Length: 237
Image (cartoon, rainbow, N blue to C red; front, side, top):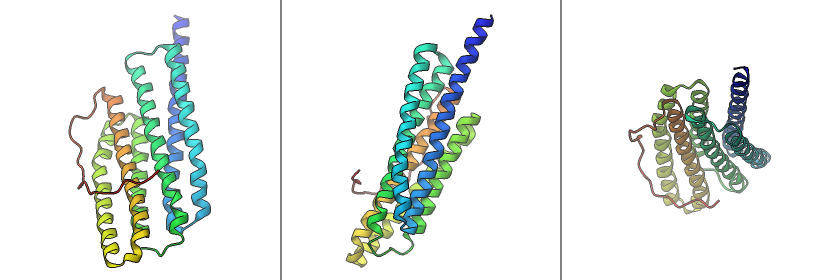
């Protein structure tokens, strides 16, 4: 009996360690989103470079999570709910890594935009959009920690707000480009940034769905609301 209790407590510690890593990774990604948007608003090339360098730490944490999860699966052979926790964490980590990449790509464009004339209102709008995605991510991580399916469902609904912000920005950029051809280059870069933030929102929504699956054992079956599917040119990595 004591041996079984020891094994169970050791496995619980393994799960706690894995979940602690995902929260650490999530914190870094939250910071990357906000710092990337702030560096753009300030045209702060040094801060943008810090965001780009910081992506290596996010990638390293994902690798560490993958290795730790593989070790736990091999040694503990978890089943049912315990296995679901580990698989969910791996999916969360993959989404966080991709969000980090989008934040890095946002920071990359800061140096280019610093040399171009600003587009009125765009920086504040992009910052609001990034802040909303960061708040969605924070709530998703809170829902994961507290096993709060209701909060995760609320995140799903808020993705529509991000889509609407993106669509509004897309129309504004088109207007600027039609009215002043000199604004085309800046608007194209800003549009790529807006699209990247919208994609971050989609990834956070996927994470919220994964949290619901972790808690309930089922993926949400309702179609989540989406904004207009505005056409766009794919952003180069």
